[in-house]
Amino acid sequence: MLMKISGKGRPHRLFVAGLHGAEWKDTSDILLRMTPPATGMVAVLPVIDKGDYLSTLDPEYYHDRGALIPEAIEQIGPDVYVELHSYSAGNLAKLTDRGRVDRVGVPGFCALEDGVLLGSVSPHIQRDHLSSDTLCLSFEIQRSNERSRTFAIRMLDVVKECGSKEDFLNYVLEHYPVQAKKAIEDYRAFQNSL
Ligand SMILES: [Zn+2]
Image (tube, rainbow, N blue to C red; front, side):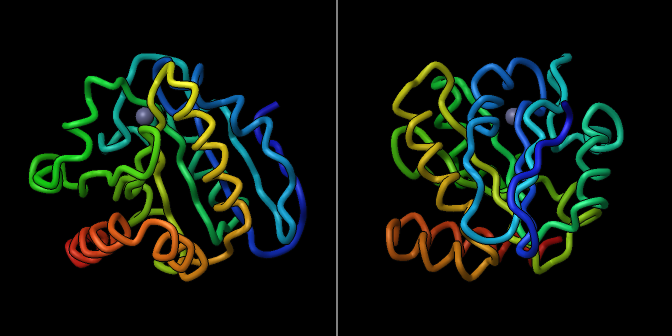
């Protein structure tokens, strides 16, 4: 089984996990256990690649081991695109550093709750394969942390019901106003740089 689809009609959502290395161990089953959305459809790709770790910021990633992703985007035409990654607690400071945009070309992640981080997806997938109207989100969950996992499941349940950038923005502004403000500033600066 490569892609699992539940629900039907717009909005179309594509959620992917297990993008590289051992990340599938912490993320794939979260997508597999997701229940159908109240409206529209969700397509999930729970495992993209289990091989050596190659960053999604590497220009080769989406052509090479991650090639399933642009194929699925072509097929689904998502209104919402979500990547679910995992990270080691030791990398938390590096991932949330505001100087990250200058270091690696994408803004730092913002911390929501229980070690779950929210950020942008790689420009290599957003700029080259997705429409500018698509809601694109990347979540990082903390490896081997049950609370982080539980919170990520809750967040994905929220995103699963979103159909647009505006839906998600309204949710984040209401529930995480401080993080949202920072994320919006970083995101605008990042989009303008694409
Ligand atoms: Zn990752």
